[in-house]
Length: 173
Image (cartoon, rainbow, N blue to C red):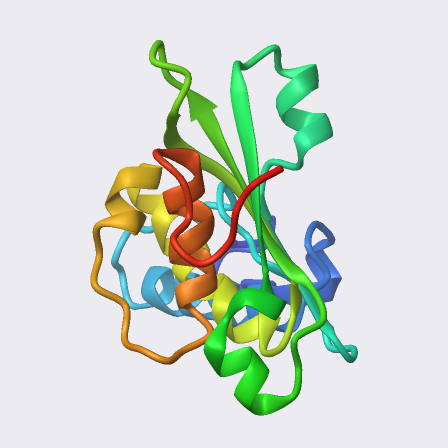
């Protein structure tokens, strides 16, 4: 993130790219490490996008259209918040989690390619998805991770279960 002037660095909106506060903060960390002599490059492979609306909207990774254009075999599953106990308790059960995974030879979901959430606390929930994509996690990795109950992240887990043998709390049609 060093400019054409040695010792001068730039981050955030002035360099273009992702015009997001969290991306600018990340770029600031990268620039600071380089200023201190540590070599680090910015990696924009996994950037969460959030809309702070009611209900919230967040996404990370590929959309279904991008996966289709890439010619990558994929599988999409959804899990509605109306089937999540915590969302019901909060009285915020509008929306869903959509999980896009590689389609394995068995037809089940493999590596997580994208996650899109519309619902309560979507901007908080997207962090689990961003970490999954960054680490190359699979639907099985998410599905077999113990999630606290009752919580909203269980909706991500259930969408992952749907990629495999089916969600527990919602029947796919």
